[in-house]
Amino acid sequence: MTPYRRRGPVSDPSGTAGDPDPAGVTVVIPCRNEAGSLPGVLAAVPGGYRALVVDNGSDDGTAAVAAGCGADVIEEVAPGYGAAVQRGVESVTTEFVCVLDGDGSLDPGELPGLVALLRSGADLAVGRRVPERGAGWPLHARMGNAVIAARLRHRFGLRVHDIGAVRAARTATLLDLGVEDRRSGYPLELLVRAGRAGLVVEEIPVAYRPRTAGRSKVSGSVVGSARATWDFLKVIR
Ligand SMILES: Nc1nc2c(ncn2[C@@H]2O[C@H](COP(=O)(O)OP(=O)(O)O)[C@@H](O)[C@H]2O)c(=O)[nH]1
Ligand SMILES: [Mg+2]
Image 1 (cartoon, protein in one colour):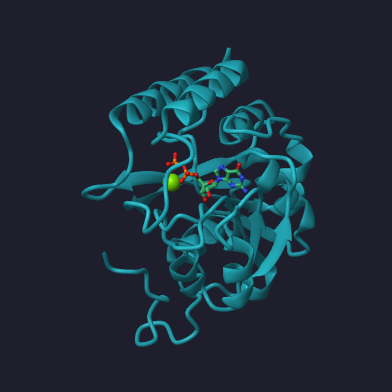
Image 2: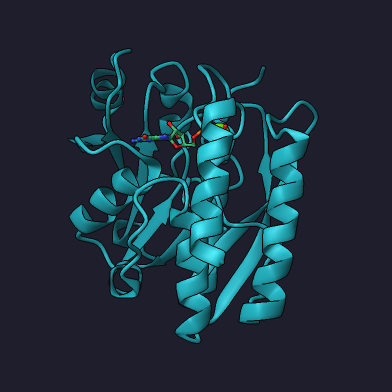
């Protein structure tokens, strides 16, 4: 499996893919037991962007690995994806925040494309995952995702085709939405609230690859999938 490379020393000497103010962007990375994937993920964070790893409940040295790779690290004691993301976003001091998984399935090199959408007027920019061969996206999760995205389009007028595993926003905008879910329902509740608030939500395709190490905690596990389905239904009922 090829690790992500920091984007382009040749075509893009800054590594920021043309972002005019990389110091204004923090990348929040929620992690539970992602020590194997994190070095590759952090190496691919565009130069100048701050990386903030939110660890909870890891027993594989995730926090030490993250710190060793130069990321800021905070601990969140409450379990759950939403708890980690919320804690991370609350700690951000930059104007913009991106949120991305720590499992290597998504390329941080694509984040400047999302931030560019914000700079040109979007309130929330989300990635639509385009699976590459072998991506860890089981059929049940893809079908559920498609059904929920259709509901988001028809009921909330959002032009999205994914529930947004990767996203970017102004930090203040994200906090103002007041998302309450602290587990797997967080990304969906975020979109529902964005739709209700009339935010401009834009979506661009992003590559979705197999995680580079470790085990899935959500869609690839029976308990994780059941929990996610329950969380989604609560949000969108
Ligand atoms: N901090 C934290 N991160 C989590 C938790 N559950 C999942 N994650 C992270 O959320 C991201 C997505 O989880 P993942 O296991 O890849 O789910 P999948 O993509 O559906 O297989 C990964 O970066 C995980 O490490 C959690 O309880 N706490
Ligand atoms: Mg994953």
